[in-house]
Length: 161
Image (cartoon, rainbow, N blue to C red):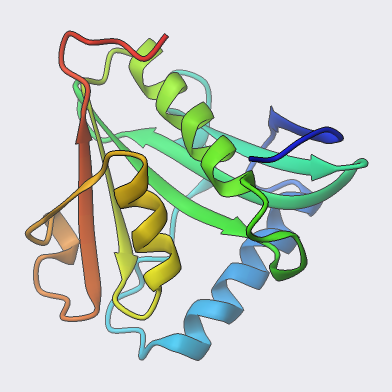
């Protein structure tokens, strides 16, 4: 599990640090996959107050990870843009970001969180499964993608916090 001096806070997804992390994520994904559809496109307003949130994790003040969540219906939230820089992986940062995103979603009224990752990202799939996500058939725009793996976590009446 991650330990101090890590911090996680909300930040605009188009801030300089957020954009640097998103570009690094896009570079990684473009190296792993033939991009069939541009699932990477998410506008900054989708993470604005009331619609979603975008979080940046920092170690000693340096941005090392990010993730966002947006409501796709009043009851369902979708996690997007999860990324941790390679030098700081395997220290629990992604799990902390994900837990904070889930907390936001539940507080916003969602009883289910969904996400998509790719079949060439087994570490991400293991993380999601370890924290209670279940693989489901392709959701929405990912239904036709042979490269996508979709997951959901249902909270129902059981709130996280």
